[in-house]
Image (cartoon, rainbow, N blue to C red; front, side, top):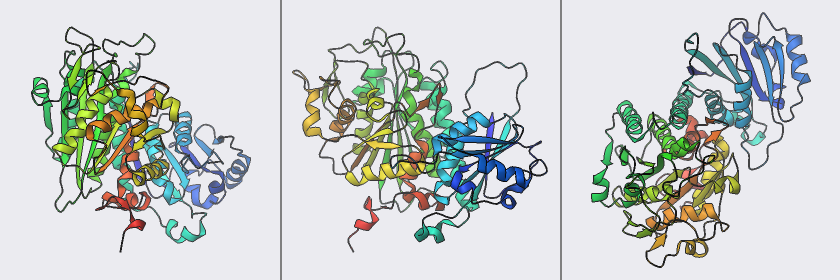
Length: 520
């Protein structure tokens, strides 16, 4: 088990006792002096060794140089950064920490500009997943990794006076809360369904509610059917553990805006009667990644003094096979009142999310609704392993999401929002719509998102954002905690937290538009 601590100063340590990894872009490493870093290196590393190591680095895309055995290492991040990448190079930071960590109490020193502090700290948090069922001959004690920052001035001269400020203790709290949320999210996603079914997921929600002094609302089992949640009920009805809609609500005084985050929480997805193949099913424990991310982000946002009404809605079900499983050709009535002909039981996430977003609008009166889901494998084809797909009815929020992705390291890229061309893919002769597209080559990820938006209504006057993060939710065989840093940054303007305010897109909190477009 690894515990992360964050410091805005360098603690003194001998590499022999506390190994150290120093990470930064080469241009930033060249700007620091040995005097700035010697407290982490003495007495093992001299100034000449340090300088020689820095000048020997040739990142392509990264490079490392040992300063003292494997106990003191300096690492250079990629030199190039395209406009669709994060300037923090957070993915490279995670890999370097994973590769260079020695598995004892150690320090990671990040040399960066202040604008990259949050993404860099979150990147380190992703390197230490918590879930493991390995049996060890000797049980390891808890390990502490101290993440420390050396802030260099921005290369942008216009903003240099802003960037040179140090990171305050109050600002570091945002990192502490986000790191907790990322670890929580990754642990839930990594946990198999026999330990993370709907019951156990509700326990995780309840535990976070207890930490925040919030009592969750739970609608479960036959009550879902009685109240009209045909999507969630139909998907989860065949499982031994019944499905649920669970809500955490934070309602501070003087709030003027109501925001809802809706997460897909399919704790396991067999595909239902449209069953997945033997190579496609392993890994489907990750299908609750959207709900897990929203749980971690909700904790982080509330602990960061969120100023508006915030609801986290978890649409929980196991898409299983059994006598009461939904059949292709069945027709379900969803919470919106619209009927859906099932032509693919493996397109289940959109059904549970449709119920969730309508509940957010109808019952909670949310005027900003964001749903997050491991919705389609087509997302990976459209935007790849690192960029989630963003679909929105609002161009400003599409831009906010891309900005937040670059600043946080949880990258996003837009996919087409065009219901007048794409929604016809769901045409049904006997119901309001089918649940899976007719043509799988026609903007499949966009269509899947539009199915959710159709139940909210394409004339919905508020902001609707859909994030498909099917591939970014994991890397290799481990969860990444994707989504926590993204949501925390995206809604940073809604928090009384100086670091989040510093990096967040400049949103007018009351109007939900860019500040520059306000009418005076």
